[in-house]
Amino acid sequence: MGSVALSPEMKIYELIDAAPILLSLFSRLDIHLPFGDISIAEMCRRDGYNTQLFMMLCAMHIDSRYRPSQEEMTEDMLPEVIAYLRASHRYYAERMLPHTARHLEEVLSHCDDLSERVLRRFYDDYAHYIKSHFEEEEREIFTLMERGGERDANFALFDMPHADIDDRSNDIASLIVKSLPESAPTSLRCDMLKDVYELRDDLRRHSNIETYVLRPLVVKYLKQR
Image (cartoon, rainbow, N blue to C red):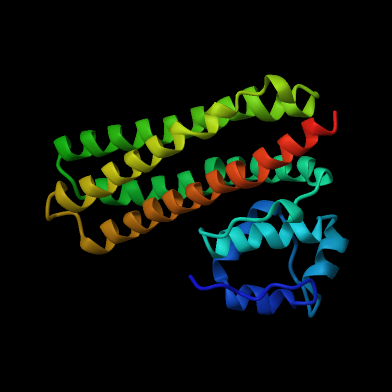
């Protein structure tokens, strides 16, 4: 997706119209509609968000290659970044994974017993792995940071598990495309594939925010202590 010229004066409707992918961002932050003609800055003041951080998160969702500069990040953003990452965990666990599971059940209703068992096992393991990783991050990083234990937080959790999630997502996609019987309709397979790829790509953006926003902010914070 190409870049969008973000500014505090940009109207919220213009932002969503230019980048519909940001609808998930509004959903996970529980930002209330309607917006009328208010701007990004007005919305952030209304709902208590840091305008610069909100635009940074938007930019990272619009363009996965975008990396915020050190100058853009300030120490006071840290609690809000943690709150955003927690909200994303809830969004994945309560919205995206159940949505994908509903499409899975539709696909499985057209499969033979063996295909059903294999795909269900793959998906259940995949969903369990993602949720377990979130729980570990909450326990070993976010909770410690909120209690002032930044130096004890296990930031290594931000590394390999996300690559493993990518691999597991691709394994499920390959199974749907290559191994299910022809009795499973293409339209249902495509619905589930869209869910799997959307979740995979959103988790990549989530990982980027942990790596390129949270980590540098923690480094800045610790230097001040």
